[in-house]
Structures are given as C-alpha cells and as structure tokens.
Length: 285
Length: 280
Image (cartoon, rainbow over all chains, first blue to last red; front, side):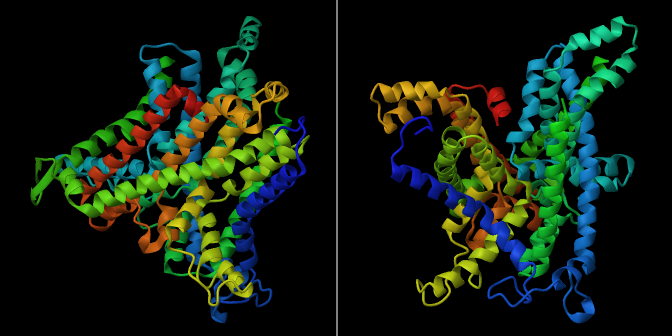
C-alpha cells in the first residue's frame, strides 16, 4: 500500500525484509567476486586464507600469474577496447545521422524504416551473429570465385565482430540521440539563421552543443554494450578474442582468482564511467 | 542532404540485417547432396521435428524462458512498487540506482559470481555445512533452478525499469480514493494498479523473454552439460560441426518463436511495437 495510507506493522516489516533480501540477491555475487580476488589461495573458494595482491601483481616465476602479468588477459582487454572504440564511433555517427533523418525529414517509406530500425533489438544476438557470419562468408566466396579476390576481413575476426555488435548498438544510439533531438526547439536554429549564421555555423554553435549530452551518453552506452557483448561476438570471433570470450573460455576450463581480479577491475572501470556520466548529466541543461 | 542521411541507415539495415537474414533463410532451405552441390529442401526442418532431442530442447528452452520471465515479474514488481509508491523522499531514487548498478557489469562477471557462490566447493555449500543443514557440501550448480536464478538475475533490470516508469505515472489519489471507498489491497491491485501498469508489464515481459530465449552465456555456464539450451544447439551446428544449413534452420526456428511471443504479447495488451520498444 502507498505511503500516504495506513500500513499495518507486519506489512512494513515485510517490505523492509523484502527489499533487504532483494539487495542481498543483487550484490552478493559482486561482493563475493571482489572478496575472493584477494584470497591467498589458488582457487576462488572458501575458506579465507589471508589477504594477498598476488592475483593482481603476481609473477609467473612465483607460480601465480597476476592480472597485470597475464599477457593473454591484458591482450584481450586491449582487443575489447579497440573493438569497442570502433563500434562506438560507428554507432554514434550513424545514430546521429539517423536521428536527423527521422526527426527532420519526410520521405516515402519513413514509417517502415522506423520500424526496421528497431528490429535489431528483437533479434537474438546469436542469430545476428550467425546471419552476418553466413552472409559475409558467402560474399567472400563470391569475390573469390568471380574475381579471385581473397577478402580476409570477411572471415571470422575482429572486423566482423565490430560489424556484428554495431548492427544492434546502432539502434540504441539512434533511439538515445533521437529522443533528445525531438525535444529541441527549432526556433533557436531559425533565429540564428535569421541573424545571418550559415547552416554550418548553426550546426556547430547551436544544434551540436544541445545534442552533446546525448552524444556523450550514447557513446558511453555503446562502448559499454560492445565491451560486454558476448552472444554476437562468440559467433564472429577469430584468433584474437575480446575479453568476454577469453573469460568465458577460462571459466569453462576451471576457476582461478585471476578472473576475480579482472572482474573487479571491470567493475571499477564501469563505476568510473557511470560516475562520469552522472556528473556530466547534471551539468547538462 | 536527405540522400546523405539515408545512405548510412540503408547500408546498415540492408547489409547487416535484411540481406543476412534472407541469406540465412536460403541457407536453411537447402541441402547438401555432394561437395559444393546443393538442392532446395526442407530436410533441415524435417530433422528438427523427427529428432526428439532437438524439439525437446526447443520446448524446454521456451518453457524455462517463460518461467524465468514470470518469476522475474513477481520478484521485480514489489521492488518497483516500493521505489515508486512506498519509499519517501530520496530513498526511492537511491533504491532505483542500486538496482541499476549490477547491470553496469558484464554478464560474464555476474555469472562468475554465481559460479563461486554455488559450486560444490563454493560459498553457499560451505555455509550450509557450517549451519548444519547438509552434512557434506552439495553441488548447487548444473540444476534447472540454477539456470533460472542466473537468468532472473540478468533480467531484473529490464523488468524493473519499465515497471517503475509505468507505476510512476499512476496517480496516488486514485489508490487513496479506492481505499476510502472500501477496496482492499487485492482489489486495488487487480482493478487499478495492474490495468494502469499493463503497458510496462508487457514491455518488461517481452524484453525479458526475448533476452532469456536468446541467452547463451548464463545457461551454458550455470547449467553445464545439463543446460540443454537451444542457442547451444545453434552454436554446435554452426561453429563445432560446421553444418551451417542445420544451424540456420535452428536459428530461424528460434527467431520464429521469439517473434511469435513478441506478437502475442503485443496482441494481448493491444500495444504497438514501436511504443513498446521506446518504453523498454
């Protein structure tokens, strides 16, 4: 029952207990990961054997390879950053173009296009992955048999991973940027044009500054979604694996506290990103 | 200018969405009769219905996804209610932010947390022994319930957000009026709250069901060899056995189920696809 109505004591207690249990459910897995990143034992399991930083700093010579010495994990973090940067750049550019297209222009088939733009969100990631894999390899085979071209970037690998993730993250960027552009007061642009500003100057000094929060927000979300993507990536990955795929492989082999260390590192990175976004959001008009 | 703005949208949707799916459909409708020789055939789809393992895994995935969606709704609804209607002042906003935090972390990380908690040598089995509930550590992984917990955990955000936004717009005075006129809590819930929140409930359920059905990571990690999730069959056919025709057919069956459920949800609640996606 709502706050302004009388609530019996048992209901109030039950509410508090429920919320507490819910928060425990939400945070227990994350807290456990953080705790066992510092356990002085070869497996991330109880009992607690004392505090150590080995799983971050450990030397291969000491028998424990810490995160900052694990070249495979560090390499895949870098791979993820490269992939996410490409996906972010592509998604924000295409998303902004789509936002202007859908908010500013009228053309035949616009309604159908707006539905089609949402479709990537309802296709399971695994299927996005296999359809792009099959299509790109068909084109590669065609190019090979018709022109004798060997198009390596159409084979499973990072270019395909970028394209696969972009195929649905572009929708999210489009929605975020469109939502802000929709609320824009176009009389501001008209006033600037009346006062003699060129179209480029209007875009640079009025429209773009207004859109900035949405551009930054969609860039952050795109980066995060790309970094975390697993389903689509797994189908398109080649020799260089991004972090989620490497972690998945290691988790299937067995447990090591290094995975806790890299997870904790990811949590902190996400927290920094979230805080930066919230601060930026407060400053925006 | 219009052409310049249309080009990226059309390139993106045609090259990455429309054409690949047409290609996938063609792939699923052919059969290999000799190396590099194919003929049109429905045999991939026939295999699905003839081989019990395949359709059983399909049905199992659908049912478990539906159960996970229902449980996610049951767990998330009271929380959304507390956030929007019970908590005073900033407590509600704080609680909402707390709900969002775990979803900034990758699904891989969240699954790792559950692995450490639930595996035989893990935290919860050790706790159960210490409390004297079980004599020896029990394996809590690799059960259907484990898969459900993992799926609910990854889905909560997508349920809480649309529920909160639909409950926020519910005018408290309506509830007060119903209360003053003598309605009990159950009647208020059934006749005022649920009809008002229906769009949010539908949006949340559609998104959660879709994500659950298409999930690969959580069922395979928490369910192990017992997971029997349909996406796993697709992966096996495509990547392990290199039988792309069969994998494409499985992919289309999954897509058909997902689309059918989305359409059913929209039909039941009388909403438009575009509105639901915006809400979610």
